[in-house]
Length: 401
Ligand SMILES: *Cc1c(COP(=O)(O)O)cnc(C)c1O
Image 1 (cartoon, protein in one colour):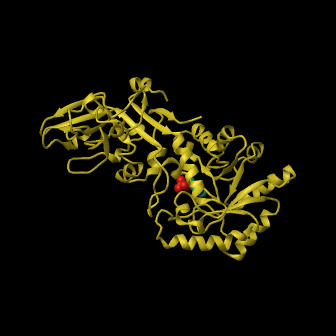
Image 2 (cartoon, rainbow, N blue to C red):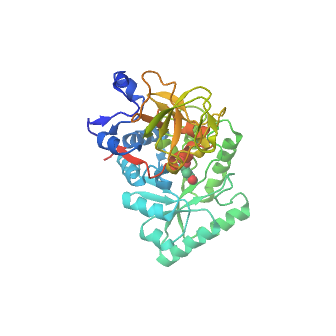
Image 3 (spheres, rainbow, N blue to C red):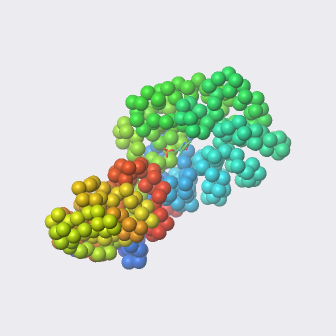
């Protein structure tokens, strides 16, 4: 990052003189060459990812902190995020699919890479020293067969169910346990894991219930390491940490935990440069379906980002409805009318100072408008907001190796 940068949302000189701290709160630094060319920019702060990992690792020590980098590191770019996590000290990763695992292996030749979807192509897993997470009897059989063929026990993790009823082996009954044990004979199980259903709600009785079941069932493989918690679970306290925690979302600045702040900072900022500002006369509508009508003359800015970029159409606001917000010069402005494929319209009338103009930057996601808030307003969660940010946004990585 050079000193040559342009601060979005800092608009005209009147605002830029508001002081560096003020401007810093308005949005990310965008390199000048990018600011001149790109209309929509996702900034990923890799140094913040590294600090977040270290912070969580410190919180759960002596348990180990892994990094969950599935779905291209929650949409942020696994090839940039994985090296940043490695540099911070992360040595154990989780991905969902075989392709993600192969990519993770290329980024992290020495790391332990777990594949949550289990055994798809055993030969590929073996060739690249990947660790499948076994969650069905068929998975175990496939891996046991691969072990037999290769003439040695191969590492695997075992995913047992404790109440989520999604993936995970049923080891609640003696028959279930026996069926698993019989199949495991030739497999080297290094990790027994399970996953919590309600960890974001610290008072939910399901947490203690699943913890108790996990303690009772993890012995299915004596001596194996154990892992129960993801981002929110690790906030439930040391009883949930076991040998390894598996955060994803929190590494990327997510604050899904409902019982207080997770000790992580903002990683992702999304900004778009205003294409045009017009005054919409009283009684005129804005956008498709004419769903929103100006009840007084309004200044409406058009942003070059829409649902094809990951700005949810559910953030649209008809007259009298509340939709999404963006921040312009740090001031929150409501989305008005429908979000379309490439464009979003926002009411900038109430931004103080000189009238907002084309060329100023609006913060769609960042410190003023968090991923949690965007998720809530769109009727979804921050996880989906992150993973849907499209590749059409220009990407800027800061703080990377
Ligand atoms: C996605 C996932 C995680 C990471 O969850 P976060 O809430 O993002 O921390 C951990 N474990 C499993 C099994 C997962 O599927």
